Length: 86
Image 1 (cartoon, rainbow, N blue to C red):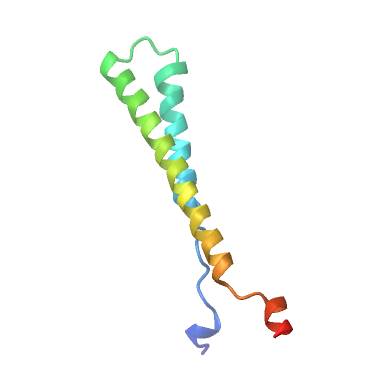
Image 2: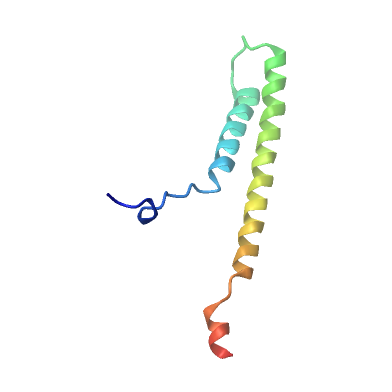
């Protein structure tokens, strides 16, 4: 019987949520402005437009925060070349 520590669980990418937000936001933008569905009510069109803009902006903000966190993590990690010189 194998130990659980021998096979660590795979980590999910932190960008999955951002990609899902962006995808749904772009779909809402397409459905609100570019779709030629004349049977859709005016309230649904407005909702798709507002939600599309909101989700797209949220995805951009989330991507910015992830990039900022990744660059801070790279700066904190000690480089092997600087420790060899001391």
